[in-house]
Image 1 (cartoon, rainbow, N blue to C red):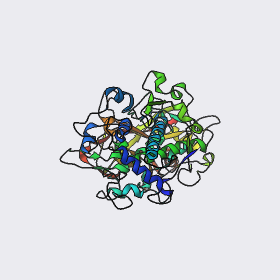
Image 2 (tube, rainbow, N blue to C red):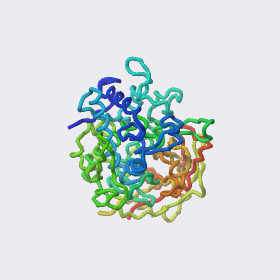
Image 3 (spheres, one colour):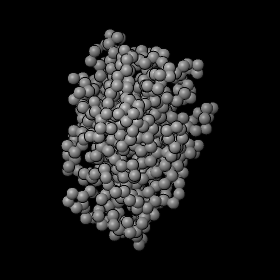
Image 4 (cartoon, rainbow, N blue to C red):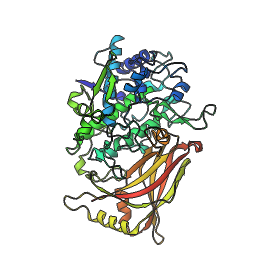
Length: 510
């Protein structure tokens, strides 16, 4: 059994697995764009944008993309905003790992090479692994293929190797959600997403996709202004789905997300993958695009979510399944996540009801934005009583969600930390709680209407049950309205036109 190892625990910055990875990447990069075994062909399977690829030097203006048959079969098929997000990416990783391993062997390396993973949650490992942050090989010569200039996340933008993941902007709340499939109507999206068909750019991301997946993409890639090319900020490679596969760190990030999927399944017997045939057999069973990637010899390999769900049969395992580097507490004994999501609740078939919403679209620029949500007094009283009483035997636990709907703009790198502000009553002081964060990974595509999308932007649902329960049960809180503050991890450019169409608070339960 092949074992994927933690990149920070391989024995050195340039341990053999990383050195061979760099050599393989260096060998695959010069291959023609239309070669199924080239670095850029594999990146195009995740997403493609001619303008960005040419501006960053990953495609010559006169260079031809793959032939139409290959383009249609292989390119632009990543699943986002889809309950196929996890299984599609697992197959994509397996195919990529096979290609790198085959290339490593050709270069004289070990036949058991495996793809490392980057667990940014483990103490001291939130920084970009050193081999990816240096433009030089270990001997001091340049052209290290793991180093990418277009990483402009937190840190010093003039030093792309100094990127790190701010741990106050990411969390593992998704690990407390028991249902894989969620709802699209404003409640919990589920660990794995909502029931969709083939979806290359869905607007509602599942819990593990939304957090930490989306945030890490934007935080690593960042963005930068190029006045000679655009009035809007341009994304770093990791920040946008159409360029992310070009960055070698992409694969280590997704290996960690893949690891968290299996960790979630192992952490509680309730955590299971969907049983519906349409999920198991994949979109091909619905007459839609099949899941297919090339093998190292260029021949196509088709796979299904059911095959990817059988972890015992995928041919690899991980050195450690603890999400944050320490044993995950028994889920049954946990009452809430760090941002207040109450565990043990069910989503499928639940009723979703609006408690209140803000009055108008909210522009977001600079350090962030603020608004308030006016609550319906009668519904709030009902929810407060249910939260105080707890669920009846066999009933669903009452949950409350903050929805940020129709988020549009042109800043895929933006990460917004979200705070709720509860006003005091009769002169009592107000209090504020951080309830999570959202990453705008994919917002440009969701904003621009195309043949498959209406341009409605992205929508997010944050579980605020615990802080809302505290607010509802406090005799010193004003039940009339709740403030919402969005704080940008990095300043949002005015020209990015970021806005939130509506912010609402909803209840989910029986």
